[in-house]
Image (tube, rainbow, N blue to C red; front, side, top):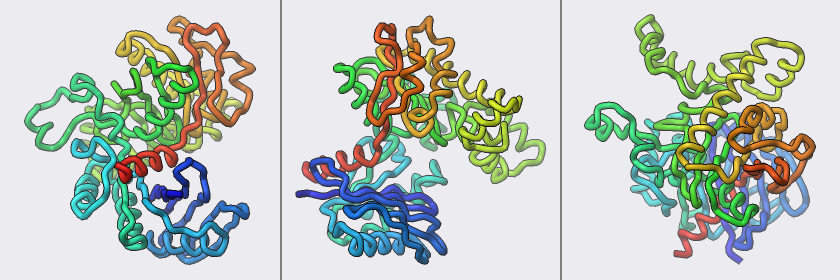
Length: 387
């Protein structure tokens, strides 16, 4: 049996999953509050346990993970470790085995994803030190979008400057969009023209044709596109120039765009559940925020239908997309003339796997497909090392 450990490293957290080559999950868990008094929540053969411990850095987080596996099972001796890396730039269009050169490149690309690549790099370095001799594979969120054609990836700015600085549309959430589009194709029996909506705290839309990404809403960075928990998505660049010229610093604008925009900027909270509850209670700011949120998504669905030349399925995924019938209803409302419609009972019903939430006779099926980025990373890690 070959086992793969998947590591998804955040700035103060480390999520992990151990799978075998039959895609069975042997263990999973989350180390939180890295940098101080932290904890691990681990699920293994004996069930779930939570352990408090000091976790000064990511290497200590991996040591805590190994110790917890030793004490509560299973024994941790992976044959390969797969890492989620957000930004691969133009250099990485497929998963790669990590060496010193790859590690250095991931660090260089941190300028394009300052909130995401540095934590991923910390996880890679900690895992290389913890599991010497075990192949480490970097799986890039941007890689699935390498098939986007030039007309969709090119920004209309000075071409020389864009080439020099690497300014183009890269797209993100690629591992999720890839997995979900494959599962949707399996469910429907064909790899057709899909619009996949990954709706969570971060959110993106992707047009998929025949299993290939042809357009996506996030761009050079994860700031472009849909309204998100704390990021506002599309914004006139002139607004940023105005803020800079009227006294805000670059760091203040960065904080505004990444932490004080989106639902949080419109309502004071980035948690969509709280926004929905506030809107139900009559809060006008919350109602406007939901209208803006759904309006932006519908705009991308319509644009992608035009790019695809038709639509064979609209697919919802990620925390909000999978679990909020209210959001699905708000998004699909008004799209009936384009084909997607909802069956109210199916939309409200809970389910674990891929499921249909539209009527059987809908012109365009609407699906909910739970994402599994860890499984997709494991598949890539095993394929790269086997090859």
